[in-house]
Length: 181
Picture 1 (spheres, rainbow, N blue to C red):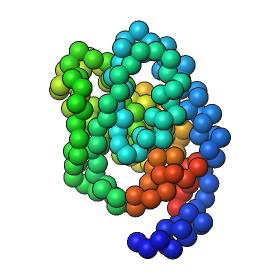
Picture 2 (picture 1 turned 180 degrees about the vertical axis):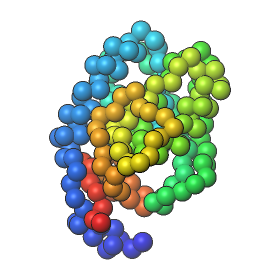
Picture 3 (picture 1 turned 180 degrees about the horizontal axis):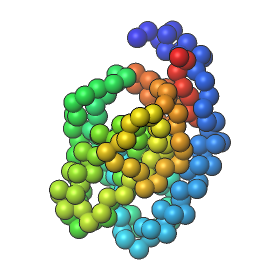
Picture 4 (picture 1 turned 90 degrees about the horizontal axis):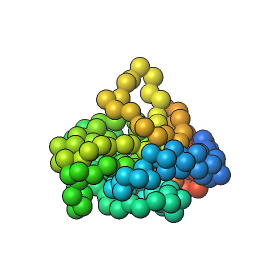
């Protein structure tokens, strides 16, 4: 995809949530996450690359002891859809006996997150709790897993920005945008 096309995608995109709306929604997650994890010494696992912006926003606001690591599992690999899960990196910190806070950008079909949760539990995690920037509402589809914390309801459109990508670009877009239909 050429750079001019990528620029035009952003220029034509519909703003779904402004940066201020995204930040305010994430602010609402801090108190319940803190209440539930402050005494658990959790391991916060970011799902790369999408969780970068959400983690960067949440971590300084979580005022309790925690460890951080990341996983990189993907079905998309820069494309708009994909079928096979590819593990690019599993956590290096031992999961056994830990409470895991799994942070991701978007829960849409839930297949990747379910596989990551299953991996954590199979490696001995005491619990796995999911926090996402948004949950996509897909008509007629029930995901195999749900998020415990979700900042935003995302329409059933292809979205990018605040960590979510369009062909590996526009993760840095200030807010959440939908591609022109």
